[in-house]
Length: 280
Ligand SMILES: [Zn+2]
Image 1 (cartoon, rainbow, N blue to C red):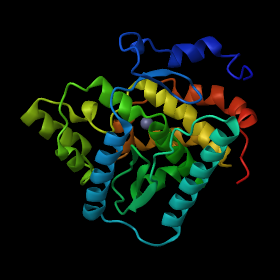
Image 2 (cartoon, rainbow, N blue to C red):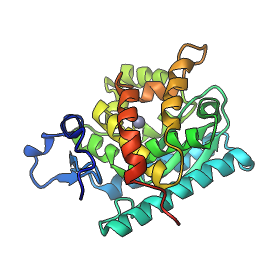
Image 3 (tube, rainbow, N blue to C red):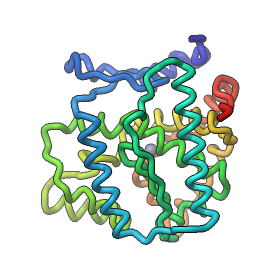
């Protein structure tokens, strides 16, 4: 493998280095591409099943958009990323980290919610509100690439493994209903004393995971043929939207590092060269 990170090798290791596995020898996984070691005590099959159940429940409660160009865009971007990533790992001759995924995409009708998420196993939701921020396919691909990266890098398994001693109930599914993220968080927190987002099947991810999802997300979008330079504009629009009456919920579930945009700027040119679009 050539030294793609050579320029920023030290910075790169600072961002992704991890010593968490030293205590749990044998329960350690490796994130594809970044090769960061991660704790994987929790079985993928279990978390994928929990997520699939939560997602099925979510779909019965949420107002979904069933037809139209916006939905087609979501599906098209998802499919392109999915296929490009599959071919990428095939060509590399390495194990496909998402081989147990059962991809699904929904577009949720809610203009007030500027959010998107991907549950373990490739269960994705985009809210119409965030389309005002993503603006175009490249912007939407940035968001979706980032979300897909969280799933491919198994960040939820890592989170769950870190919180294994804490029981997680089926009420997790309710988190997603209505999108009142912080309200749900506070309500559940008051009655149980738990911060369900820290132990749940998805949010919030830690800063290191966010950075990793930014990085892998760029790679995945680039492989799928999208213009990843748009990601900078996207995050600029995101912070602009923060000043408005309805700040993006996406930001509350995606703690932003102040270095986020400068990281993206550092990575983009290398990634465009190293991970060009894959012909499907
Ligand atoms: Zn994220």
